[in-house]
Image 1 (cartoon, rainbow, N blue to C red):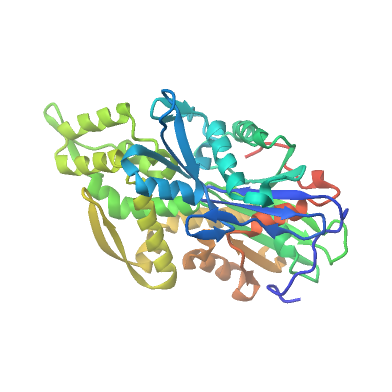
Image 2 (image 1 turned 45 degrees about the vertical axis):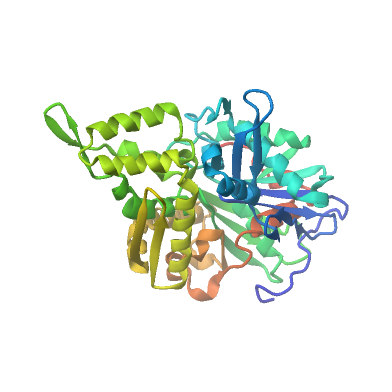
Length: 448
């Protein structure tokens, strides 16, 4: 059977197990439901401009008229709409999944309140379920949640992330089973195949790139899929975004500039710009301590206007429009050899022509680490590249030509497959949730 044709049901176990597969992503979240018939269907979410199966992993908070400290909130595309209507009175958080394994993150400052990761996650889940309407009004007893092979961060703590995930998903009042995200995508892809095959899944999310090698048996076999090896790296779409920020935006905000310290002129430390490397951290900069620190830096800076622009980015909540502009450039360069980066606000205006070759040179170190991680996944599976029959690329950053080229050079174009870039993980998780032997798929240990 040719990949992409109408798949047969992948489920071989009991035909009565209902399941929900939840892909809680750094950038987007997706839910699929398995009704016990061996198939899975995507949940459509209400949005201001219609419905769709992709729900942005974003939150917006604003002060309510109720008791002191009360907050109103929204999530997904509704959060974006609320923020765009009232940016100065809102706190907009995106990519907050990125802090799940970060032991330095304790809570997010939101006006007069602070909220822990699990509290943010539960707010998000309530809105996700609410906007899913009748489809999510009565959740199945089996909940399968995807998790990255490796979490984001220099020293991620997977045990801490598991604790926070457990507290977040406790809202559902059901036992939650965790499965590696690329394994979910592999199971979804296996439904396309009618012949045995060895499959490499490359899942490019917002925060991590994860790789799994899976052996797929012939239809009717039990088990249909057998995981052979996995590896992951905390580099993906958000890191590519930072490369654009670092080259086009941060020099306008003082990076590379100097400041006066007594009788010396010193370069501004890169640490002042570290939070711009992560959309979730950028969203939390608007607090009194950070703004006071930036004000002191501005008074000492040689280029006070540049630091003033950085302060304006923080004070005026420009993280989302910057994210939007950066994402627009990435998408344009996936189609064209040359594109224009354009950002306009009252305090910061940037227009720059960027070639695809420029962008690829910026992300070259990241692509090299991704290639090393692919090698690690193959080594853990005990296989060489020649043993792989299909390479399934999924996730938004899999659409970047340089990312795809990394795999075509290694495996050849004929073995590369794609499709369902944003939905395949949830689809596969819901299929796995209908398996009799679910324990064979779940992540029991917490090794990074």
